[in-house]
Length: 378
Image 1 (cartoon, helix red, strand yellow):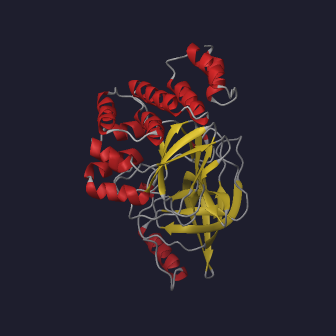
Image 2 (cartoon, one colour):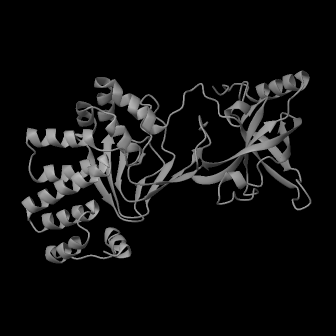
Image 3 (cartoon, helix red, strand yellow):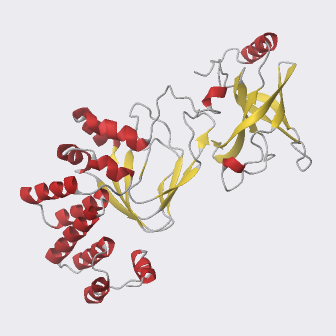
Protein backbone atom coordinates (compact mmCIF):
# COMPACT_ATOMS: atom_id res chain seq x y z
CA UNK A 1 0.00 0.00 0.00
CA UNK A 2 1.15 3.50 -0.77
CA UNK A 3 2.49 5.01 2.50
CA UNK A 4 0.56 8.25 1.89
CA UNK A 5 -2.71 6.34 1.46
CA UNK A 6 -2.00 4.36 4.65
CA UNK A 7 -1.32 7.59 6.55
CA UNK A 8 -4.62 9.11 5.38
CA UNK A 9 -6.48 5.96 6.49
CA UNK A 10 -4.88 5.99 9.94
CA UNK A 11 -5.62 9.72 10.30
CA UNK A 12 -9.28 9.04 9.52
CA UNK A 13 -9.18 11.05 6.29
CA UNK A 14 -10.08 7.98 4.18
CA UNK A 15 -12.99 5.99 5.57
CA UNK A 16 -15.17 3.08 4.62
CA UNK A 17 -18.14 1.65 6.46
CA UNK A 18 -17.97 -1.73 4.75
CA UNK A 19 -15.97 -4.55 6.37
CA UNK A 20 -15.50 -6.10 2.94
CA UNK A 21 -14.04 -2.92 1.44
CA UNK A 22 -11.79 -2.42 4.50
CA UNK A 23 -10.68 -6.03 4.20
CA UNK A 24 -9.37 -5.27 0.71
CA UNK A 25 -7.35 -2.36 2.13
CA UNK A 26 -6.04 -4.58 4.93
CA UNK A 27 -4.90 -7.17 2.38
CA UNK A 28 -2.44 -4.59 1.03
CA UNK A 29 -0.89 -3.96 4.47
CA UNK A 30 -1.61 -7.06 6.58
CA UNK A 31 1.31 -6.42 8.97
CA UNK A 32 0.16 -2.96 10.08
CA UNK A 33 -1.18 -3.34 13.66
CA UNK A 34 -3.03 0.01 13.59
CA UNK A 35 -4.90 -1.10 10.45
CA UNK A 36 -5.74 -4.45 12.05
CA UNK A 37 -7.15 -2.63 15.06
CA UNK A 38 -9.26 -0.32 12.90
CA UNK A 39 -10.62 -3.36 11.02
CA UNK A 40 -11.47 -5.06 14.32
CA UNK A 41 -13.41 -1.95 15.40
CA UNK A 42 -15.37 -1.98 12.16
CA UNK A 43 -16.17 -5.67 12.60
CA UNK A 44 -17.35 -4.96 16.15
CA UNK A 45 -19.65 -2.20 14.88
CA UNK A 46 -21.21 -4.74 12.50
CA UNK A 47 -21.77 -7.20 15.40
CA UNK A 48 -19.14 -9.65 14.12
CA UNK A 49 -17.77 -10.04 17.62
CA UNK A 50 -15.67 -13.20 17.33
CA UNK A 51 -13.95 -11.96 14.18
CA UNK A 52 -13.36 -8.61 15.83
CA UNK A 53 -11.88 -10.28 18.90
CA UNK A 54 -9.49 -12.35 16.80
CA UNK A 55 -8.25 -9.25 14.95
CA UNK A 56 -7.83 -7.27 18.18
CA UNK A 57 -5.64 -10.07 19.52
CA UNK A 58 -3.65 -10.27 16.29
CA UNK A 59 -3.07 -6.51 16.45
CA UNK A 60 -1.88 -6.86 20.06
CA UNK A 61 0.67 -9.48 19.01
CA UNK A 62 2.03 -7.27 16.24
CA UNK A 63 2.25 -4.29 18.60
CA UNK A 64 4.29 -6.41 21.02
CA UNK A 65 6.61 -7.47 18.20
CA UNK A 66 7.48 -3.75 17.92
CA UNK A 67 7.95 -3.37 21.68
CA UNK A 68 4.77 -1.27 22.06
CA UNK A 69 3.33 -2.72 25.24
CA UNK A 70 0.82 0.06 25.87
CA UNK A 71 -0.76 -0.25 22.41
CA UNK A 72 -0.86 -4.04 22.77
CA UNK A 73 -2.58 -3.74 26.15
CA UNK A 74 -5.20 -1.42 24.67
CA UNK A 75 -5.92 -3.87 21.84
CA UNK A 76 -6.23 -6.74 24.31
CA UNK A 77 -8.60 -4.70 26.46
CA UNK A 78 -10.86 -4.33 23.44
CA UNK A 79 -10.74 -8.10 22.92
CA UNK A 80 -11.43 -8.79 26.60
CA UNK A 81 -14.43 -6.44 26.45
CA UNK A 82 -16.01 -8.71 23.82
CA UNK A 83 -15.36 -11.88 25.77
CA UNK A 84 -13.80 -12.40 29.18
CA UNK A 85 -10.32 -13.92 28.78
CA UNK A 86 -9.48 -17.30 30.21
CA UNK A 87 -6.62 -17.62 32.73
CA UNK A 88 -4.53 -19.32 30.04
CA UNK A 89 -5.09 -16.39 27.64
CA UNK A 90 -4.06 -13.90 30.30
CA UNK A 91 -0.94 -15.89 31.12
CA UNK A 92 -0.04 -16.22 27.42
CA UNK A 93 -0.39 -12.47 26.90
CA UNK A 94 1.83 -11.72 29.91
CA UNK A 95 4.39 -14.20 28.51
CA UNK A 96 4.39 -12.27 25.24
CA UNK A 97 4.98 -9.01 27.10
CA UNK A 98 7.94 -10.53 28.95
CA UNK A 99 9.42 -11.71 25.64
CA UNK A 100 8.77 -8.47 23.74
CA UNK A 101 11.83 -6.55 22.50
CA UNK A 102 12.74 -3.09 23.83
CA UNK A 103 10.91 -0.35 21.99
CA UNK A 104 8.09 2.15 22.18
CA UNK A 105 8.06 5.20 24.44
CA UNK A 106 8.54 6.02 28.14
CA UNK A 107 5.22 4.43 29.13
CA UNK A 108 6.24 1.18 27.42
CA UNK A 109 9.52 1.17 29.34
CA UNK A 110 7.57 1.80 32.57
CA UNK A 111 5.29 -1.20 31.93
CA UNK A 112 8.11 -3.46 30.76
CA UNK A 113 9.96 -3.00 34.06
CA UNK A 114 6.95 -4.18 36.11
CA UNK A 115 6.08 -7.73 37.07
CA UNK A 116 2.78 -9.29 36.00
CA UNK A 117 1.04 -8.50 39.26
CA UNK A 118 2.34 -4.94 39.23
CA UNK A 119 1.08 -4.36 35.66
CA UNK A 120 -2.35 -5.67 36.57
CA UNK A 121 -2.44 -3.42 39.66
CA UNK A 122 -1.81 -0.38 37.43
CA UNK A 123 -3.81 -1.17 34.28
CA UNK A 124 -6.63 -3.53 35.29
CA UNK A 125 -9.13 -0.68 35.77
CA UNK A 126 -7.83 1.95 33.38
CA UNK A 127 -10.24 4.14 31.40
CA UNK A 128 -10.01 4.28 27.61
CA UNK A 129 -10.98 7.41 25.65
CA UNK A 130 -10.56 8.76 22.12
CA UNK A 131 -10.15 12.39 21.04
CA UNK A 132 -10.51 14.00 17.60
CA UNK A 133 -8.04 16.69 16.46
CA UNK A 134 -8.53 19.95 18.34
CA UNK A 135 -10.11 18.41 21.46
CA UNK A 136 -8.71 19.56 24.82
CA UNK A 137 -7.80 16.63 27.07
CA UNK A 138 -6.38 18.58 30.02
CA UNK A 139 -6.80 22.22 31.04
CA UNK A 140 -5.09 24.45 33.61
CA UNK A 141 -7.08 24.45 36.81
CA UNK A 142 -7.65 21.92 39.61
CA UNK A 143 -4.93 19.34 40.42
CA UNK A 144 -4.97 16.45 37.90
CA UNK A 145 -6.80 13.34 39.07
CA UNK A 146 -5.47 10.91 36.43
CA UNK A 147 -2.24 9.86 34.76
CA UNK A 148 -2.76 9.53 31.01
CA UNK A 149 -0.90 7.21 28.63
CA UNK A 150 -1.00 8.01 24.91
CA UNK A 151 -1.79 4.83 22.96
CA UNK A 152 -2.15 6.42 19.52
CA UNK A 153 -1.93 9.87 17.99
CA UNK A 154 -0.09 13.11 18.63
CA UNK A 155 -0.88 15.78 21.22
CA UNK A 156 0.54 19.18 22.11
CA UNK A 157 1.27 19.96 25.76
CA UNK A 158 1.66 23.62 26.72
CA UNK A 159 2.80 24.43 30.23
CA UNK A 160 2.21 27.74 32.01
CA UNK A 161 3.57 28.78 35.39
CA UNK A 162 1.35 30.68 37.78
CA UNK A 163 2.63 33.71 39.65
CA UNK A 164 2.44 31.75 42.91
CA UNK A 165 4.41 28.80 41.55
CA UNK A 166 8.15 28.52 42.02
CA UNK A 167 9.52 25.98 39.53
CA UNK A 168 11.72 23.22 40.93
CA UNK A 169 13.25 22.29 37.60
CA UNK A 170 13.71 23.61 34.11
CA UNK A 171 10.87 22.56 31.80
CA UNK A 172 10.09 23.48 28.21
CA UNK A 173 7.01 25.65 27.75
CA UNK A 174 5.60 23.19 25.20
CA UNK A 175 6.29 19.73 23.89
CA UNK A 176 4.84 17.20 21.47
CA UNK A 177 3.29 14.18 23.20
CA UNK A 178 3.36 11.04 21.05
CA UNK A 179 2.31 7.42 21.38
CA UNK A 180 4.01 5.82 24.33
CA UNK A 181 4.27 9.13 26.23
CA UNK A 182 2.45 10.13 29.43
CA UNK A 183 0.97 13.35 30.80
CA UNK A 184 -0.82 14.47 33.96
CA UNK A 185 1.13 15.57 37.07
CA UNK A 186 -0.37 13.25 39.69
CA UNK A 187 2.99 12.37 41.25
CA UNK A 188 4.36 13.09 43.87
CA UNK A 189 1.07 12.17 45.52
CA UNK A 190 1.56 14.45 48.53
CA UNK A 191 1.76 17.55 46.31
CA UNK A 192 -1.69 18.65 45.18
CA UNK A 193 -0.66 21.44 42.84
CA UNK A 194 -3.12 23.11 40.45
CA UNK A 195 -2.65 21.99 36.87
CA UNK A 196 -0.70 24.45 34.74
CA UNK A 197 -0.89 22.29 31.61
CA UNK A 198 -3.03 22.48 28.49
CA UNK A 199 -3.06 19.30 26.37
CA UNK A 200 -4.71 19.34 22.95
CA UNK A 201 -5.05 16.57 20.36
CA UNK A 202 -3.21 17.35 17.12
CA UNK A 203 -4.33 14.14 15.39
CA UNK A 204 -6.92 11.47 16.31
CA UNK A 205 -5.72 10.13 19.64
CA UNK A 206 -6.44 7.25 22.00
CA UNK A 207 -5.58 7.55 25.68
CA UNK A 208 -5.59 5.16 28.64
CA UNK A 209 -6.14 6.95 31.96
CA UNK A 210 -5.37 5.65 35.45
CA UNK A 211 -6.75 7.41 38.50
CA UNK A 212 -4.48 8.90 41.12
CA UNK A 213 -6.20 6.84 43.85
CA UNK A 214 -5.56 3.57 42.03
CA UNK A 215 -1.94 4.49 41.46
CA UNK A 216 -1.56 5.26 45.16
CA UNK A 217 -2.98 1.83 46.09
CA UNK A 218 -0.69 0.15 43.55
CA UNK A 219 2.34 1.96 44.99
CA UNK A 220 1.46 0.95 48.54
CA UNK A 221 1.24 -2.70 47.49
CA UNK A 222 4.13 -2.65 45.01
CA UNK A 223 7.07 -0.31 45.74
CA UNK A 224 8.47 -0.99 42.25
CA UNK A 225 5.48 0.84 40.75
CA UNK A 226 6.44 4.02 42.58
CA UNK A 227 10.06 3.69 41.48
CA UNK A 228 8.84 3.37 37.91
CA UNK A 229 6.64 6.44 38.29
CA UNK A 230 9.63 8.47 39.43
CA UNK A 231 11.48 7.55 36.25
CA UNK A 232 8.41 8.04 34.07
CA UNK A 233 7.64 11.49 35.43
CA UNK A 234 11.28 12.55 35.13
CA UNK A 235 11.45 13.86 38.69
CA UNK A 236 14.65 15.33 40.07
CA UNK A 237 15.85 15.24 43.60
CA UNK A 238 14.96 18.23 45.71
CA UNK A 239 18.70 18.66 46.23
CA UNK A 240 19.43 19.12 42.54
CA UNK A 241 20.19 22.66 41.51
CA UNK A 242 20.21 23.34 37.75
CA UNK A 243 22.83 25.91 36.82
CA UNK A 244 21.47 29.33 36.07
CA UNK A 245 18.05 28.67 37.60
CA UNK A 246 17.65 27.84 41.28
CA UNK A 247 21.29 28.59 41.98
CA UNK A 248 20.70 32.32 41.56
CA UNK A 249 17.84 32.50 44.09
CA UNK A 250 19.68 32.26 47.39
CA UNK A 251 18.71 33.81 50.69
CA UNK A 252 15.37 34.74 52.20
CA UNK A 253 12.76 35.54 49.55
CA UNK A 254 9.78 37.89 49.90
CA UNK A 255 6.76 37.31 47.71
CA UNK A 256 5.42 40.82 47.97
CA UNK A 257 4.42 43.18 45.15
CA UNK A 258 7.16 45.83 45.13
CA UNK A 259 6.78 48.54 42.45
CA UNK A 260 9.70 48.33 40.05
CA UNK A 261 11.09 49.90 36.92
CA UNK A 262 13.51 47.78 34.92
CA UNK A 263 15.76 49.40 32.36
CA UNK A 264 17.24 46.92 29.88
CA UNK A 265 20.53 48.36 28.73
CA UNK A 266 21.66 48.45 25.11
CA UNK A 267 23.70 45.45 24.03
CA UNK A 268 25.32 46.67 20.83
CA UNK A 269 24.44 49.35 18.27
CA UNK A 270 21.43 47.41 16.94
CA UNK A 271 19.70 47.14 20.32
CA UNK A 272 18.27 50.15 22.07
CA UNK A 273 17.37 50.65 25.71
CA UNK A 274 14.07 49.36 27.01
CA UNK A 275 12.33 50.66 30.13
CA UNK A 276 9.37 48.80 31.63
CA UNK A 277 7.37 49.38 34.84
CA UNK A 278 5.89 46.54 36.84
CA UNK A 279 5.97 44.59 40.11
CA UNK A 280 8.24 42.09 41.82
CA UNK A 281 6.76 38.97 43.33
CA UNK A 282 9.87 37.07 44.47
CA UNK A 283 12.58 39.31 45.94
CA UNK A 284 15.84 38.31 47.60
CA UNK A 285 19.38 39.68 47.91
CA UNK A 286 20.44 37.60 44.91
CA UNK A 287 17.68 38.45 42.47
CA UNK A 288 14.08 39.18 41.69
CA UNK A 289 11.26 37.99 39.44
CA UNK A 290 9.73 40.91 37.59
CA UNK A 291 6.21 41.01 36.11
CA UNK A 292 5.54 44.01 33.83
CA UNK A 293 2.28 45.88 34.35
CA UNK A 294 1.76 46.17 30.59
CA UNK A 295 2.92 44.26 27.54
CA UNK A 296 6.13 46.26 27.43
CA UNK A 297 8.41 43.28 26.80
CA UNK A 298 9.01 41.93 23.31
CA UNK A 299 7.53 38.43 22.89
CA UNK A 300 9.93 35.49 23.19
CA UNK A 301 10.96 33.95 19.86
CA UNK A 302 9.01 30.91 18.74
CA UNK A 303 12.20 28.90 18.45
CA UNK A 304 12.65 28.74 22.23
CA UNK A 305 14.44 30.65 24.97
CA UNK A 306 17.94 29.78 23.74
CA UNK A 307 17.62 32.46 21.04
CA UNK A 308 15.78 35.01 23.20
CA UNK A 309 17.55 38.37 22.67
CA UNK A 310 16.70 39.46 26.24
CA UNK A 311 18.63 36.66 27.93
CA UNK A 312 21.97 37.82 29.26
CA UNK A 313 21.18 41.54 28.82
CA UNK A 314 22.35 43.91 31.54
CA UNK A 315 19.65 45.75 33.49
CA UNK A 316 19.13 48.40 36.15
CA UNK A 317 16.33 47.35 38.49
CA UNK A 318 14.87 50.19 40.56
CA UNK A 319 12.61 49.17 43.47
CA UNK A 320 10.31 51.72 45.11
CA UNK A 321 8.52 51.54 48.43
CA UNK A 322 7.96 53.32 51.75
CA UNK A 323 9.55 56.48 50.34
CA UNK A 324 12.77 54.61 49.49
CA UNK A 325 14.15 53.78 46.05
CA UNK A 326 16.87 51.19 45.47
CA UNK A 327 18.62 50.73 42.13
CA UNK A 328 20.54 47.49 41.66
CA UNK A 329 22.43 46.32 38.58
CA UNK A 330 22.08 42.80 37.27
CA UNK A 331 21.31 40.67 34.24
CA UNK A 332 18.38 38.73 32.82
CA UNK A 333 18.88 34.98 33.30
CA UNK A 334 15.50 33.51 32.40
CA UNK A 335 12.12 34.33 30.95
CA UNK A 336 8.90 32.62 32.10
CA UNK A 337 5.33 32.66 30.85
CA UNK A 338 3.01 33.03 33.85
CA UNK A 339 -0.72 32.72 34.38
CA UNK A 340 -1.92 35.86 36.19
CA UNK A 341 -5.61 36.62 36.65
CA UNK A 342 -6.43 34.07 33.96
CA UNK A 343 -4.17 35.50 31.26
CA UNK A 344 -0.70 34.65 30.05
CA UNK A 345 2.02 37.15 30.84
CA UNK A 346 5.76 37.26 30.31
CA UNK A 347 8.08 37.75 33.29
CA UNK A 348 11.83 38.13 33.76
CA UNK A 349 14.14 36.48 36.28
CA UNK A 350 16.87 39.00 37.12
CA UNK A 351 20.06 38.01 38.88
CA UNK A 352 21.61 40.87 40.85
CA UNK A 353 25.31 41.60 40.76
CA UNK A 354 27.16 40.58 43.92
CA UNK A 355 26.10 43.07 46.57
CA UNK A 356 28.49 44.47 49.19
CA UNK A 357 27.53 43.62 52.78
CA UNK A 358 26.14 47.10 53.55
CA UNK A 359 23.88 47.17 50.51
CA UNK A 360 22.81 43.60 51.19
CA UNK A 361 21.74 44.60 54.69
CA UNK A 362 19.91 47.62 53.30
CA UNK A 363 18.00 45.41 50.86
CA UNK A 364 17.03 43.03 53.67
CA UNK A 365 15.78 45.97 55.74
CA UNK A 366 13.94 47.38 52.73
CA UNK A 367 12.21 44.08 51.92
CA UNK A 368 11.54 43.37 55.57
CA UNK A 369 9.81 46.73 56.08
CA UNK A 370 7.58 46.12 53.08
CA UNK A 371 6.84 42.60 54.32
CA UNK A 372 5.74 43.87 57.73
CA UNK A 373 2.87 41.67 58.77
CA UNK A 374 3.53 39.25 55.90
CA UNK A 375 5.34 35.94 55.81
CA UNK A 376 8.50 35.41 53.80
CA UNK A 377 8.26 32.82 51.09
CA UNK A 378 9.47 29.38 52.11
